[in-house]
Image (cartoon, rainbow over all chains, first blue to last red; front, top):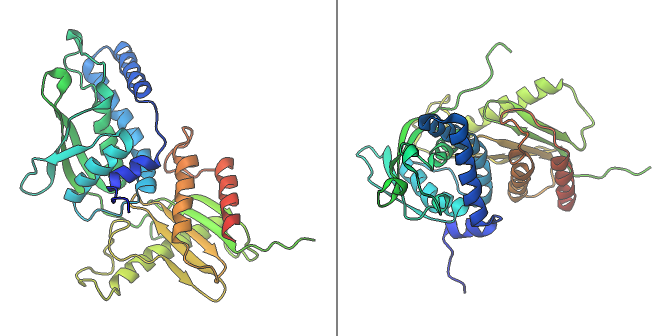
Length: 185
Length: 154
């Protein structure tokens, strides 16, 4: 009898795969183009976050349909699902969750390997750039579609000399479901 | 003259804001309301049914009042009801998308079928670069894939 696959592995096997190098080089070309278009590094960071947000609001349905996860009852579970199932299914790597704060509303997602940054070196002119900022936007957009408002930012970045990739994920509030129609009819 | 023998009646797709993203009909001989009223009525019904079902849940803690709304997919949720003339099945995703399938009352459990329809929606609508989330959609590929799948359920 085959050993039980972890849910991330099952989800990873279920989706179509794209060549990793094609993905990395395409992303690199996008960042390069944004740098040429906007010139200011802060603007590029914002654009990457906005693009990530637009991806995230659509990606959530793809993720929910393919991975069959049920609704998470608390933020700890959400962070675990993102790290173990989400990252595994969509990027092929797992992240680890750590550094919880006392309320369980903030945590860190740590990536040992990051397929977006293969072959990348940041030149001196772009030292303020968060190269993988798109990931922050994706997580923020996806979580907003499941009623959670969050703030996601990079804390450690290997392209800037740190030893790992660390994102700080903070839940701001839960958006309650409201009856959408006005009571006039 | 060929008679249409189909057990599927219609499919509605709503988002969390009550906007009907899609309405697909196979067999519906009696229509009494305008499309907009019909969709609003159905959405309102399901909204109320959800809170009602959660409230009468024998396993719940009973701390919520009737107007308390759980986030989609959490806690007790109903998935179908049956009358003598039709069966209505509901799939609600954690992202707030609701799929409602109205079928012949003799159909069995349609939860897996609804999951498959959710996958069809993701493939042809969500991944479509021309689709604006939150807007009603009309996609030929979605319609034809859905029709083909539904034939296998008959």
